Amino acid sequence: MTSTPAAEQPVRSDKATRVESHGIDVIGDDERRGRARDLAGVWAAPNVSYLNLVVGGALVVMGLGLWQALAVIAIGNLCWILVGVVAVSGPAAGAPSEVITRAVYGPRGNRVVIGVNGWFISVCYLALSWSAASVTAFSLCSRLGFEPSTAGKVLIIVGIAAVTLVISVYGHATIVKLYPKLTLVLAVVFVVMAAYVFGHADWSYQPPSELHGTALWATIAGGLTLVASAALSYNNSADFARYLPRSTKPLAVAGWTAFGAYVPSVLFTGLGALAATTLDMTDPQTALGRIVPGWFTPVFLLAVILGSIANNAMTVYSAGLALQAIGLRIRRTRSVLLDGTIGVLLTLYALLVSNFLDAVSNMMQVMVAIVAPLMAIYVTDVLLRRNRYDGHALSAQAEDGPFWYTAGVNWAGAGALVVGAAAAFAFLAVPGLYIGFLANAIGGIDLSLPVGLVVPAVIYAAAMRGRTA
Image (cartoon, rainbow, N blue to C red):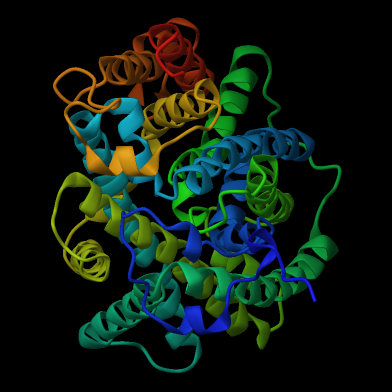
């Protein structure tokens, strides 16, 4: 009787019922399990989401025709391929992205990068997403016949956060086992929603005032940036692939990661665009509520909340690893709880005290000028090194090691990031908020996405030539 190769062993169910003990330490070969296709479910769950409906509707509200919007959705979501490429570094190193990027920026330089991108932006995103889920929960309570008081709203916010944090604390095995099931549940709800949307959609829709010339290209470019920003924010995808056996084929890891995220993202963002052909998607919940039966609305609202929890559980999981990578000596479970506590406080402040949510939302719109260069440099490093990473050497941070560079900083990575981000900001155009001087010079066309991907990648590849063997 032959045994099943490690690369083909499924994740054991008992692992999913234990709190994950690992943080940013290297996963030993004897603990590596799972299959590359398990990643499809992991990435599908957070993309069967209400947020995608909103983004799809926004493209039509911006002035695009239906087929133009669908093309933007299909092309913009191709950035999930980059997420897949980054994921292959996880099994190679047995470490999360927060450690692997020490090869890119050096141990000390990486602390700054992770502090800004891996932790600060993640916590702000938590506040945004929890705020959206909490507002949905308030609406659900109203439909069920009771208006929550201030104390009730606090309990709702804390309750949503608590469920999220339980998933994150239990960690990787729980996410891998739970998310495929959650994907099926969410998909059923959104398929029902799709049936009602199809029944009201105008497949020949054209905007009342068609865009032409510079205005059209500016809108298309802005739409591509909006769609791509979600994928580009996930330059931590190695976190969820690092438990796979070292022998797992990189193409399979990249393919299942990208496939799992791309398909639901395209379908449900497209559904939002389709809904906008006949509905006012500036207020999606109210608009969609007009075309579905009363019994289905609470089900839909609950699905929105579950989708937000799935998305945030992955975010706070990686944010916990980021705190460890920065240098904070704290167990992963406690770092997750710390991040969650900060996120809850920001959410409470956003919804009950101030307009903090508006400020954070505006900030997140311009983050593509940072996350695009970060993703581009990481992908370039994976390709330059041919995915050869020594997780133990990266974890050791030895001054005489291959990743110490100059005083713990790889100036090739740091320089490429600074120049790439500066170029992206110069071409960034967010009407009413910020327009870079080069974007303004070309009529307000936002080229921050291609510039933010190409410029830093070229600079980093040139600077690291012959240094990644």
